[in-house]
Image 1 (cartoon, rainbow, N blue to C red):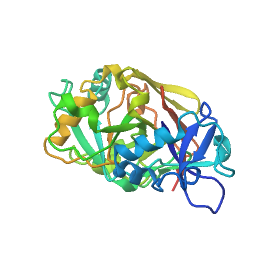
Image 2 (image 1 turned 30 degrees about the vertical axis):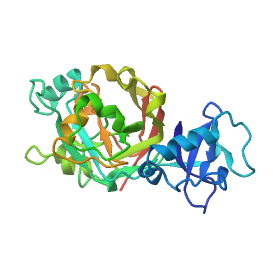
Image 3 (image 1 turned 120 degrees about the vertical axis):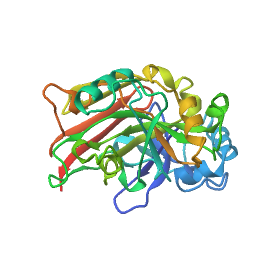
Image 4 (image 1 turned 180 degrees about the vertical axis):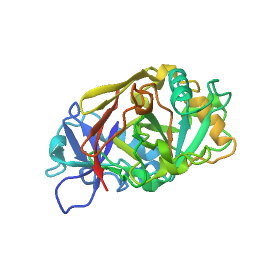
Length: 301
């Protein structure tokens, strides 16, 4: 299933939506199943409710083509929001071979491949949705950069998970654009560089894990003003999703709705010749096969 968080009309509250009809329609699933099934009002609550609720929704909508009046909307006519507000976002740095090489040339990182995942965090306040602006504050950065990343949405509490069991803890997948102020790295620490407001565009939807049975075969790409900057494939991750979940949960509990951003392929702005950075007026589009496209404008603060 493919879930979105959307506003059907100006002045109305955000709703949890199910994408149907080959991606052309979004259904207010709580309203559509009212009286038949008690559906939580937002995606994070749905995830926290557990797999039994998800299975009940799947059964209830199977084969359904007619929806109650007022519950189905053309996707092009609604406003999409970030699918959920994660409890925490854990980023993975230097997780693609080519990105390790380009970072060592341009960002003073180690040229050797990491022996263990390189982890950092982004606060929930960094999350914005499709169409929402990425903030460009010239008082804080002149090196605002992009990174298209496959994001894993955690489905249940995970602690000390063995990699062989890791997929049982995955709810689904979405896109995260790991925005970075390259000139705000502080003594090698990345939190302020990557954690500022709007530095985690997320969406446009969450695709449940059963629809992407092999998350390590997906094409990733990123465009700035229509010009392609990144072109990679998730098969080139140094540490795959099971290894990441095992490593993270060895010391950090992952909870339902948490997000792991699994790293960026090559082609970041700092590695262009000459370096290229985002400026107000730019439009950034991150695409991942099987999920869709996440588009955000860059706006001056």
